[in-house]
Length: 290
View 1 (tube, helix red, strand yellow):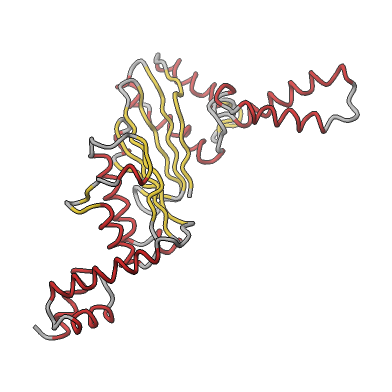
View 2 (spheres, rainbow, N blue to C red):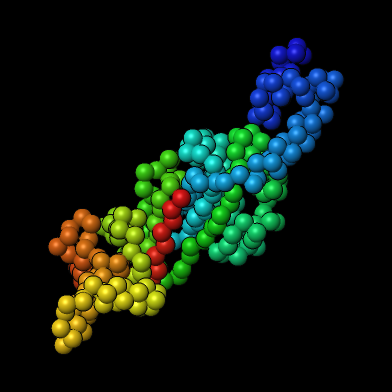
């Protein structure tokens, strides 16, 4: 094999640059296996140096979400938007999400430390990350993941400004519990606006009960400080009105529907339930952002 053929083969196997491949072959007497090991050792050193660098970009990766009943979401970060759109990074995100989804031995909702024993194509996750960091040249971090499954609910997801069919910088999931799962699955397209609502309007909770009480107390304090010239006997009524407005604007069920502001999300859901003789209730929601 000629020198150029050896370099090409080594590049194909490792994904390393031409200069690194030339040096590896030179250091290892043109032996491919020894050169791969040499590059891997150097890659580990490079990767370790990069693992302290800040990661402010990345993707939310969805696997199998078109099923609406059983899927996985993973949040993975990198340093730049350029790498977030890189085909190798996106391929890794998809492969990782699939591996998490299919592994029955890890908890359903976790962070990177919960994946230490995860293998991808018979290789440890740590080695896969090292290889990718070496190849791409940026720090990569797995932030979190979550598996979605329920016997009595459907899950509707939305990816905003997708990089591909399964990755985006903003993603949302709404869980809708029901008394008729098969019929609910037929209503997914109609209900998808609710997951879009979460991404667009970023509600603090589903309803008043799911908002942190401290947030409501802080809002009440702000209202009080803006009422210096209001008579004492009017204050309670004004506070109640302003708090109700705040709750309406910041809860999913209270918000005006993005596609028809004359309706609230709550009335929209009730309308679909009534028209289809089905029970539909929002059980949970998640918003993922980079």
